[in-house]
Length: 340
Image 1 (cartoon, helix red, strand yellow):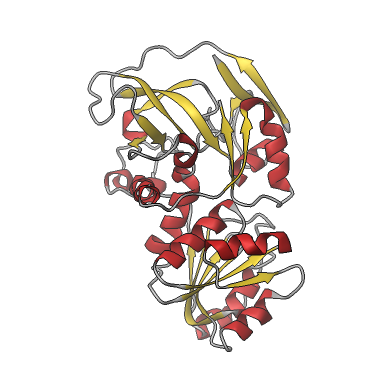
Image 2 (cartoon, rainbow, N blue to C red):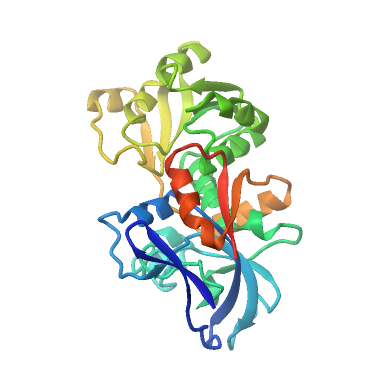
């Protein structure tokens, strides 16, 4: 069978590998159909120092597929059923896992496609408890955006920031995979959405998703523009995933008691903050990593209800390197999907 393997930094190859054995008890064998690319794939492609792994490594942290076979004792999915897969090898036994806080697992075995072999394989076995059924009517392409893109935003906005109907939110990088989802989810509950983009070509796209105000941060400082839009009141919530370039400006545009939720640092992982500003304005800052199995199910329900992901590009498995390089340019609008 085919697998897409990272064999060295910035070197991906499609290789023939032996198929997996029949699934063991408690396992499911998945025929992978579509893989969603994310910045974690870019980091892995570059060879980030914190990626403790052994090469070659099959990439892919987010995917959808079809159940090919089930092992003994598996009852919640059956052969032929469309599914998505959780992106981390959690233990299933620790207190966090038992409480449904999967992304707090105390004994996680690694992230698929980053620390351990990922989903860019035609067939793979994995624990059945990490497999989530996909509702009828959702394509493999769209479902592949649920395990990270949709569920990460679901967790950020509603589990952490507690976004409420009628609030005002600033969504950074509104044309990105998670930025497009954040706009749609916030607008769905009646929020006023301000978003930033780095290119005028993305303005109409984010407006079509529901953005009320769009700021090209390469032309105008988003801090000043956001203050003007809110008549100096500031925003209730900032959806942050850019990192060092925008973090302090994001604090400046929040109203007193505002909430900032962050899941990324693509522009740099370190910054300094004014502690007096932090406590005097009573800001609340939430770090958010990944999502829970419940968040993925919630995301699939939203897709079934008509909230579909924005797709930038679809590529075959042997053209992933080109797709990853496109992600590095920040010209992407929405998600890139890889098909087997």
